[in-house]
Length: 114
Length: 115
Image (cartoon, rainbow over all chains, first blue to last red; front, side, top):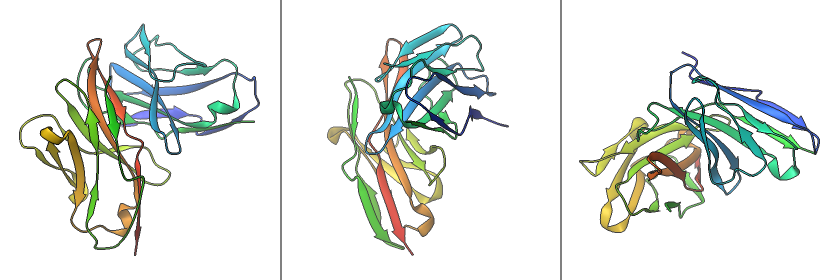
């Protein structure tokens, strides 16, 4: 049972480069989300999705795009990387689009922008 | 809008000491509350949750939390910590936004337990 799988685990980019962080879950969860974790800031929601074809913005969406073409996958795209996007990114999922259940988290992607 | 405040940013304890981490939330509706733990280099894992009923909730590894509605608090406790409890702890609240429950996390508390 893989749960939530994120790739890559580490990445270094130059300013202005683009990149897609991958997230896949095998639990048939409807709700998926992306967070960034910065020291002293906790987890901040970037984007979330309540099902295939439906996405919405979280607290810090600027500079990031998402799409949800399948239930399993929820990629996060950085179109033009900036040093301020250096962070650890976590993908999470939970059962039920509108449920109040806790989330399952992936192992994270540590991203550095030079 | 909902918010979560964790008052202790860094806590250092010796093994066998008692632990209490504060969490206060702001939300006008029915709340669902969570504590997650993140061990060094790992992802967040659920420690315990409160939906309704008994306000004293027991979680894994001997942790418990008490929901006090009048104080908007959900403090995490453990009577005797171990070195393996060294981790970062996050309080979170689920609030409804446009029909869906969107979690908001506190800034986290870093706990270091000395052997």
